[in-house]
Length: 160
Image (cartoon, rainbow, N blue to C red; front, side, top):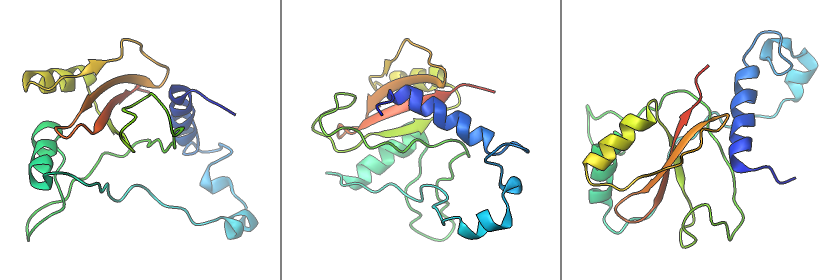
């Protein structure tokens, strides 16, 4: 089955929200004890993103300055980056996808509350951003890259 990526994100968003509603098929409270005893353990979220960089210190500073992401705490009192709760898409792409730079092995997608505000902020710092003009059922998207050319997708999910 080949589902377009944006449609898959919409399905993921809807499924995640529906699973939390009382009385829904996926609601934890509706499972029988037998189903609970057979349930497999699963991860609860992404605990980190690790990648190689030509200049890790400078790149970490760029992410902190422009996207508000702090790197791993280096000392007492340093706080880690805490992301807001929300849906996360996990999707292996075909090896030769053209959705992002073919020379890169990964692309990270960051959720944002206000895509237009984030785009203005990045552009005012001299960072090129390409906004997708289409509003999809699951939200809006824009693309940029960090100083080392790693692809970044910004996603403003649909509200409500």
